[in-house]
Image 1 (cartoon, rainbow, N blue to C red):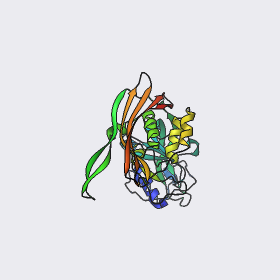
Image 2 (cartoon, helix red, strand yellow; image 1 turned 45 degrees about the horizontal axis):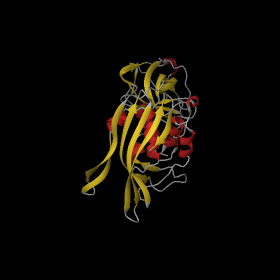
Image 3 (tube, rainbow, N blue to C red; image 1 turned 45 degrees about the vertical axis):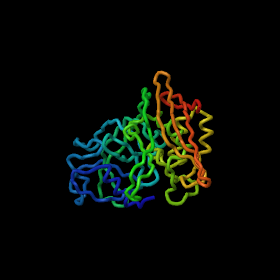
Image 4 (tube, helix red, strand yellow; image 1 turned 90 degrees about the horizontal axis):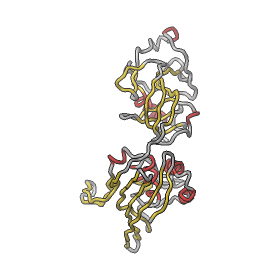
Length: 321
């Protein structure tokens, strides 16, 4: 966990820039003290309420106190642990923004869900320093937009190339990702690719030493899919939700492997291509990987096709051949 002073500074930089342009890091208390603010209730230290405000949610617009705004955004996370306040993380077309929230929104949405949110700029007085008046975005309401169905496509998702490494001063066999595709991926495609990646090594390394739950294994493809660490709650929580109607897949996820790329016996992804038939609601994941035994210096290539069915709310693993 980062020090709270750093986190609060980050929240204030991202969340809102006041028109006063005086950005002081202030500690937010556990108890929100929102109240009706008028010129008469201001202390001499506060001077006056700014005429308007700015927010990264609508960077080119003047915003006014307590007025409700509605925007379509992408959900990132609900954070009730790392900050002094409950925060609701969203992504706009340009920025990541955190709004002050209430507990009632916990476990309501998944990362990458498309939402329509209602929000406002409101005042807040920290309990530890009641003479300080802050203004910040508050979440008023949020509604999930029904997930659109993926459209038909054939796309190369990842492959390997020999690329020059500045540190090693030589060419290194490197995983290359189709980042343009991954930035616009549907949750159904993310689920299918994430399921395949769970059981195939994709350049996985421990972040420091393995923790008690072995949930700090960083894998390159899972990171590109924005699924967090291998076998973490972010990773498995997303897959369990999308495969909630598939008991076989759910049982398989219970045996999520944590094998780093230093293991004697391991697998290594080589290529992944994805094919979608939107009429049949089918996703085919074509992939090749290596079975590696480093002690014996042996490796053999395996070629598979994983087939999935999908609808607006779920994905089912049909078979792998």
